[in-house]
Image 1 (cartoon, rainbow, N blue to C red):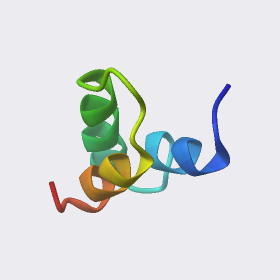
Image 2: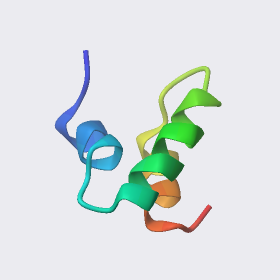
Image 3: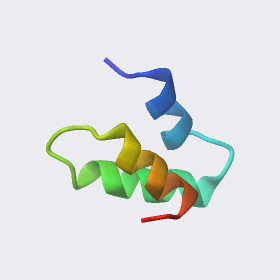
Length: 44
C-alpha cells in the first residue's frame, strides 16, 4: 500500500528530489514520510 504523499515524493515534478526521496526510502526499515519529505526538499 502506498500513500498519495509518498507517491508525490517518489514521482514528483523535481527529478532530483525524487531521487533523494527514493534513496532515503531505500535506507529505511519503516517508511518515514517526514524523512522522505526532508530528502525531497533537500533538507537531509
